Every structure is written in C-alpha cells, then in structure tokens.
Image (cartoon, rainbow, N blue to C red; front, side, top):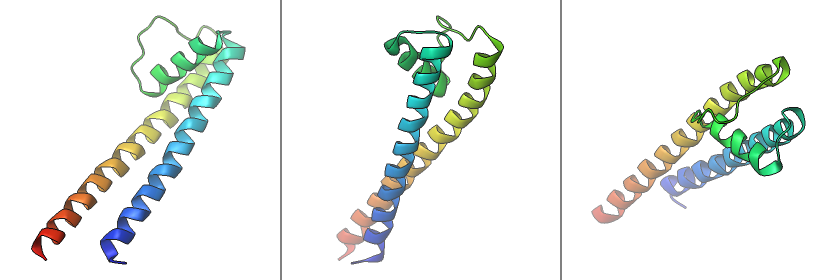
Length: 106
C-alpha cells in the first residue's frame, strides 16, 4: 500500500473519531437542554445544533445561570469540534487531489 493511501486512511479514521465526538457533544447538549431549560426533544436538538455551530437564531436562549454556564463551555467545545472537522475535511480533499495528480503522472 502506498504512503498516500495510508495517509488517506489515517485522515478518514480521524474524521470518524471527530464525527463521533461531535455526535456525542450534540447528544449531551440535547439531553442537558431538554431537562434544564426545559425544551421538547426536537427543540433541544435544534438548540444544540444552532448553538454548537454558532448560528444562534435568537428564538431560544438560556434563561438561568446554570444553562448560561453550560452554554459558554458548550460553544467553546463546539467551535473546536467544528474547526477540527473542517481541518480534517480540507486535509482529506488535499490528499485526494495529490493522489489524483500522482496517478496522472504514472
């Protein structure tokens, strides 16, 4: 197996790990917001996703000190996960482009 294929496998493996972490963080936020705000499950999922992606439409917002503190750390973690996901996707696209170029040269 060539080195570039090993690199691609490693990048895909990292992306799967980051996706699992992102899903876990969204699930954690959903459960927290469902019980502490309290929101219906779909509303809690919606709020978790718009918060972690920093979209924040403003239609739902934390209303207690506990939910505000949780949201502060949730946003910081979410921004890190989004950045890591984008980094991995860009690296995967670049790696695939390099593979195509090296195949054309052969």
